[in-house]
Image (cartoon, rainbow, N blue to C red; front, side, top):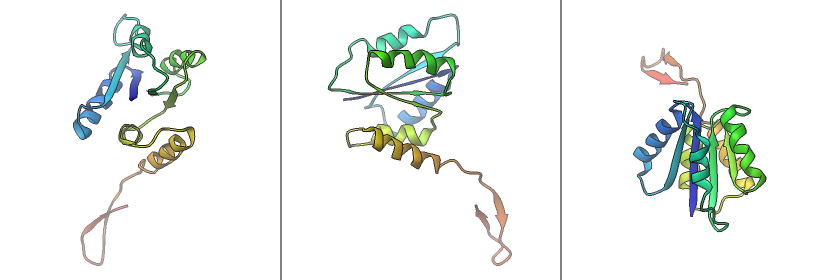
Length: 137
């Protein structure tokens, strides 16, 4: 089974989780941690996520900022547990991981990350002189 945790500063993690569930349904193992929204120790939720760790499962954690405090806290768990940690994520990469039917490998995850980078675009409005219809670039 694939188990996914999204952990970010403030409520970004919850928002992304809600977006994923809206787009693909609620049948996936998807948890989130909203860090620093109050005085609660968010590492308790991370402990809970890894509490029943099974080597036969795939664990993926997404964090918002490379080198940020949330990423640093989760990185410490890698000393004891093998899991994939993806930072600086966007919605397309989360969707590709959630919907991926193949077993995840570092190479496959790198490919998915490269694909999701292509989804980051500046969208401009340009009027076409030929047919006076707008086009996206």
